[in-house]
Length: 623
Image (cartoon, rainbow, N blue to C red; front, side):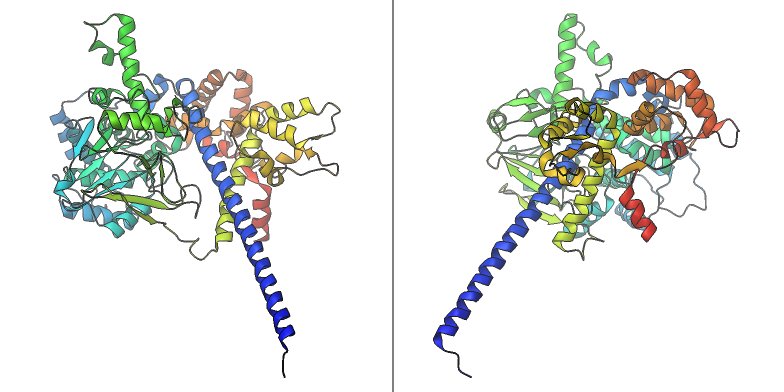
């Protein structure tokens, strides 16, 4: 059969049109996928930073020093260093214990034993944890605030960012890049703990290698090496669960160790490495003189003993000024983030540190004859990011930080030429076989669930604001009014118009049915007898209440007495300004003392104030 030329031309034309249509469709599909990926990322980041800001705002009132001391003050009488060391050595280790048995000074055999044990989900005995922390504290006392290194002693130095309790990421880095050694030096740039479930294992490994290779293993302090942060973000609870006998003493010793971690590292007098960033007030020379061990928490003023050093030479207001400057220097180093615009402003989104612009970076680098600033502190989708004309690098080493598949981890290798080389990776299990579309959908679903929980926790405030626009009580307002209300209450700086279809439905007239925001969420368990306003307060501050409970529950049994329950509530309600009378508290206590033995399963009580998503329940029932 013959095809004439005109048919061939027509066929070719149709093929070209089809190809162009497919190309256009694919571009739109990819653009739409990228838009979903970006707003998913914005949701995760905004909720994370809002949580940090809330923690800054509430840390002084919800966790006053007397409450913190309830958990973290020394549980033994003051001892000399020699007596304390002997005390740890005399702790008996049961013959049934099958984990590593460390001997000091540590050897390569010890670090290999730790790595093997943690891969097998074993826990290091409390005796060895205390000994390790004691030796680490002794070593760190000798270290300056700013460490100066040279690449002339090694081919390359590896720099890692936040790990946040992700042991799999640390093990993957060691697998790909080799273990720390004299020939393979490392810098870990803070935030070893919190959020992840293996923070204890990570600090044990890092501190062990620090003691084994003190000239080739270096640790900077991060904003999460802070006992107040640890209360909210999980590390304190993790330690108490894993070490019921020695947990309080481990935490108290860790408080000292964290405060002794160096604040910055400089390579070849050219590359500055800090956890968070800088401000227009950052001065490396002044930073070198700060008594860092007295800044136990960047969220609190140092103890008065820090002031006494200057008492003879300064009047009172000058003393206070010096203390504040010291604290600000440390906070800026640990908490600050870069921004694209010039200038330096308060980091109101996180609640601590500064936003610093390219001009601030340039000024600091010129002042100290540096060429590059490497920092961490922010999760990046590719594991790293360059800004400020390449003068600032952010490195983040915890992959899947927000959700499986949400981001890669990365580390940097820096040689004598000081040209950074980036290495990316992703610890992947369930996401390995998923397509890009499926990975975006999983992450997006998780982000939207978290956002709906934020909406539900502030339902009364949102409804009151919605109803101010809904004069006729129709249950509907315009999209712009809805977006304005949600932003004014939640203050998350999100693209609410774009997100509206995933959060609330439209009526036939094109307005938003604002009550539909809360339809997908419901309480997880039958609620104890409390007023609706108090129930909502509990949903919103559930984490804070749980922290207070864990502090009061010294033996971490999950049980507290009715009297302790009353104390918890009085502390909680007085600092939040919530009006709850004693009778209401007693009624709640009696209603959840199920077996009438005078003790309360507080975790069971809190479970009533954990929200569930109706879609998740429906899927479980179908499954």
